[in-house]
Length: 197
Image (tube, rainbow, N blue to C red; front, side):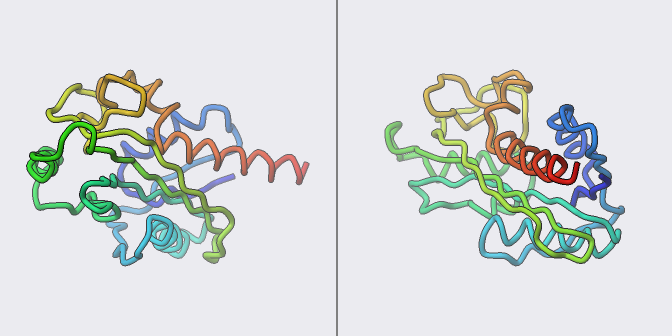
């Protein structure tokens, strides 16, 4: 089953392919260069659907998209769906801004969650599957670890003492919001294939 992954980022394609080794029938391909639909949704699911439908329209194939971000309780859920656009500059700039906003928030009040929504549509944009998963944790007072990207070096998963950037990638992929959501998608795909068999 050939499916467009609604991104032009080869790194994200490699990450999802690594999560899909148990799904040999799934053939993920990148969206064309320049793919960059405007994410105007009010939720992670809405933005995932916008991206999936845009990729399906461009490629005339089924398409899947994810939309993810960080929600921080002490910041009323921000940066949320705006995580990638939290501020101008690099991931490092966004981490510095987050630490600054939480400077006076004590350790017991720094709860946060990574959220990932996944949406699958057919070649005509009809919704076939959606889900949303959360990875609960808290925000550290300083950066630790070199794995991952974005806010990983600040996010400490619940019941853990290390940030997600200190976890081995294979461990992180099993536990993370993205790993959990993708696992639900693969289970859905396996169910559909077995029904057709």
